Length: 113
Image (cartoon, rainbow, N blue to C red):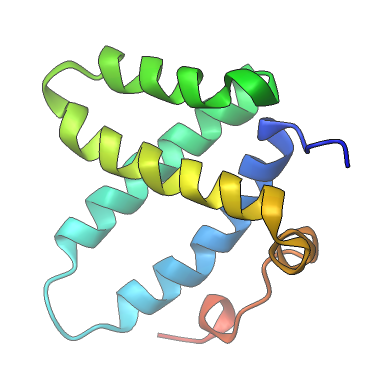
């Protein structure tokens, strides 16, 4: 199997973030930290789509983004790790790749708040 390009997978992960945003908005507690994390993740995914690093350089690219974050490295590192774990899952699990390719369908993404 030829691994998908990071940009392709990250584009699909951006669609999956919509479900997370839907769940976050329905929570009764203060979700400000969740919103910050999702914003960091969305920014990293957008940058990965634009940069389209080679599959074998994706981990190094993510580390470079963390190093460039300066004082915000902690949150960036957490989101980079999440993206890298999803990347690894996509490489090994055809069902996850298929779900992403279908637009990451989720009832949470389309529910009204």
